[in-house]
Amino acid sequence: MQHALIPPREPQNIRPPMIYVERHLKWEYKQIVRDLDKEKPLDEDELNALGEDGWEMSGVAHHGSSAYFYFKRQVEK
Image 1 (cartoon, one colour):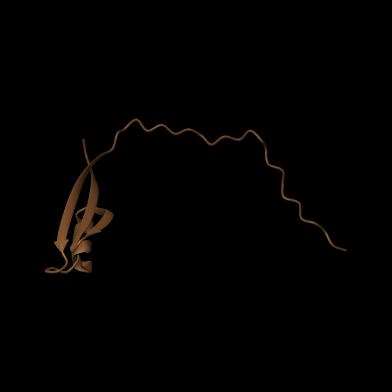
Image 2: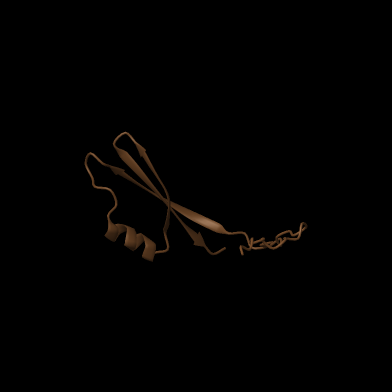
């Protein structure tokens, strides 16, 4: 005898809770530009040192022979 599995019926009017954050976050940014024809990109040691200082990589862009590394970190108001 085979039994069909029927998923439980979910209520129709469930809404996720609204969470309000009163504190506004403030960020500072750092840009590091490397000419890849003359310099190497950021290596693991450099990235780890930035991370220890609280910097988080938020983007990388490449234009011509230049690489742009973007970092951010939260600052206290």
